[in-house]
Image (tube, helix red, strand yellow):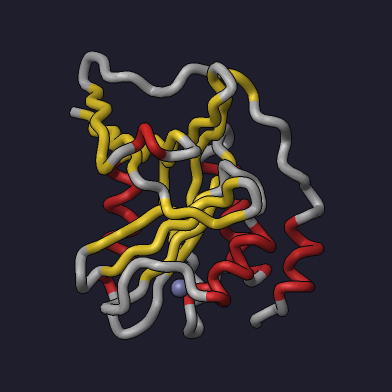
Length: 192
Ligand SMILES: [Zn+2]
């Protein structure tokens, strides 16, 4: 059952986000490669995306290109020397797909399921954003997407990932000083 954004807002705001704890960003090391994609130095947020998480969102988007797919992004958000960095660890598909992804993701069922999955599989992670697909219509946030993002993911470390499985493009967005910006780059983490 689809709830209106207003109803869902009450549900989500029950647990306000905790302040970010300090910690160093991920670095390359034995078995771990951290490489730039695009120009992460120009971004107002340092994003470190695990390749498996990104691939999970891509696979979900490609699974059915006749409709939008989507879900929530799980990860960590920390601060290092005044700069926020987010590690994207997993894309959790929203299972209650009834049509437009941007609507599905914000239903109470999706949130309940995502919270349950987070507690059992990733007790140390938090929800750091959401993702959805735009099959063949490219990378941007529609007015509705922007409304939902501002409403449910107002923190600077909250990400919106848009994947176009047919054009094979993707992009991350976040809010910086009240404006939604596309990240000019991020760091990709691959593990051997
Ligand atoms: Zn959209």
